[in-house]
Image 1 (cartoon, one colour):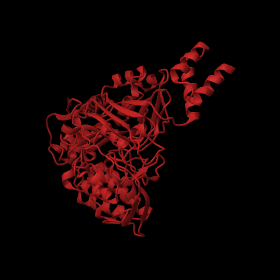
Image 2: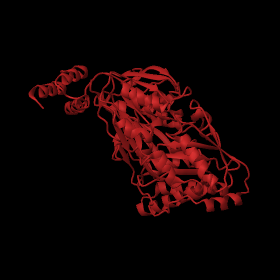
Image 3: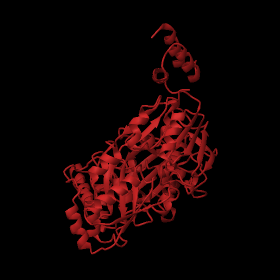
Length: 528
């Protein structure tokens, strides 16, 4: 590297040379575009976060039915724009620690049944209103309301009292709950004025960006909120999310520079895309899982022999190889894996067994095709995965008929509505939250209609059990119940595969969710 190029690098690192000028001067000195991009990224990292620029994100997971009401968020785009515009009481760091946000101090009684959260002072909503502890209490009350249809309803049901004492939010739980702070990081629980009771879809939050335009299923535009309480986040002047549900179109938009970040890179093209100039692929292992879900209370899936037949009829090893291409791990028909604390690794792994599948299918007495609904938005490769399932089930004499649904409306008209469909879960930080959100009998997102009183009682017992060995044993029993009695077919846990180009930097993988657990726009910055 000659002295002139070192001078260019130094100017870039100090922000004295924009990307276009740097690339032009580098080319004149005979430096390849790929090398210049790499060195520019190095310079940007050395400089640290920069202020300014317009970030454009291309995402799968947006629909015309999306709402700004946090209670109703159910797919990737709402997840991301809530993280970008809202704040929760706490966050969870990539290494699994609780990070205070709107709650700046957290304490609990010795029995972990009474929790006190001191609410940060000086926080302003996007409408100029000052945050109070009552706003926080009202937010939790609204998500505890059966009428809210909140995705957080399951975890809220453990609260018996929500009250305010000065600037402190006080929560009482039905049983001891050492995991309560983790539950409060749920992305549905972004704090709203008066909890959102007045207008839940107003889009008024306290996050680093505020709303400018909202075109559900098309685009969402946000701008920097000048009065945000935390000046260490929110480095862009503005953020735009483009809904690009087609995978090929997302990849092209990234390579052309139309967008700077994309989600849900398909495993089959991740390697190829990663070789494109300036593109970086990020694969993060975690708790996300791709699934097929059956309603346990709807014929023919109300017959456990039929459910078991389908569980043995799926070749999960083949699916992992052909759909995830190594970007994931085997699932075992339960929603937790080794990424979770207190996971029981001794539970036997279920494998493809056409003879056992045929046995259970014949015992079920079912006859005729089984309709499986899927869509390209269910998860990357979902249509191909359904076809692989169809082929392996045929080896056991089980006929599956695939119905390919349109992407727009899938999360409102098919998932959690039709009795057998493809879906995905991003996972949750702890087992209690995963089970409370999707398997507790009263959970609004109980998408397998798994209603089991004994399971519910075990969940409450585990929540209050402070002996970790005993708690692990309870979680093991719960996992076996879901595996052997529930409506979940979980063939694989997926890595989160995202990508960005050289126009942005600051990526940090987070096993709690894709797109840095939704915080990419909050923590990254422009290199231009």
